[in-house]
Image (tube, rainbow, N blue to C red):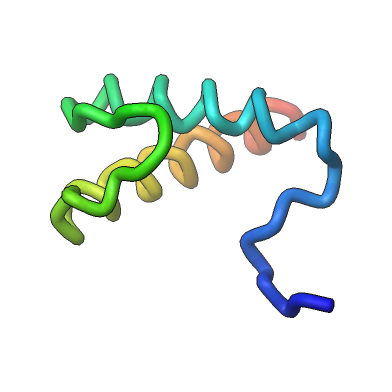
Length: 64
């Protein structure tokens, strides 16, 4: 059993998370492709992740 905290617990959510990631990448101007993206800089990858977190927090705050 893996201790990877980045795993998606609901298999049906994988596709939605991929779409969300691509949407956030477009918003911050990072060219993501399906599959391997190891050629991204740390700054680019971090900006995508940061945008995802920002949007998730905004969505949570709106739901309160």
